[in-house]
View (cartoon, rainbow over the protein chains, first blue to last red):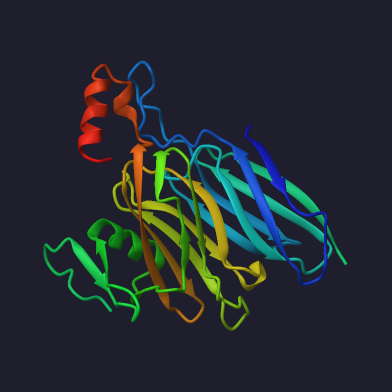
Length: 106
Length: 167
């Protein structure tokens, strides 16, 4: 299970553009490397990332093998209303990593 | 507009921005762009895309990269719908595709990418009216990310060959 760390400001003014930082611990094996026994390490990456703000998708991404180990991402969103941000990462093995952050908009 | 690229030509050019030289795009990157950004007219971005990378990286394992369209108002009528990154000499040209909405407020993403060797990295942006912009950045990498060969018995030879290649 990947460990997920997300930084969302707890409070924001209405209409403010807030910066969101995300970091997932994940090997992001690209399928081109060999282990010490010379065997190919199979591809295992997070290929999809989605963010929903109170149920509406505001940002999403498709990732490929050229994204680094422990993918780090900074993006922005407008603080429209008090509520929650749902983050979802989907990996090649069908696992879904989730995180929920609360935000208070004044 | 595409100018060239017919037959066996390996390079494509996109419309030159008045203030910039024409951009040459390798076949493999152009195909990836058509695949991820759609079959559309690509234009050299000029000042529209700000693509920030270090000019040199000691290793290609984790290179910070920022793609932004600083002048986009990100309104319903005029916003950036997607930002893309491609590489020329990685095993695969695809890096990442980011899909934005007006609710993003700012057309900017920062991430960390892998680079196999010194090469051009390409960034693309699609605006809500269908305009597609492309820009490129050359980065030198001392030790590539796909360093499978340095773990093999002839590692020294592999490293020497890599240095000779300038990668």
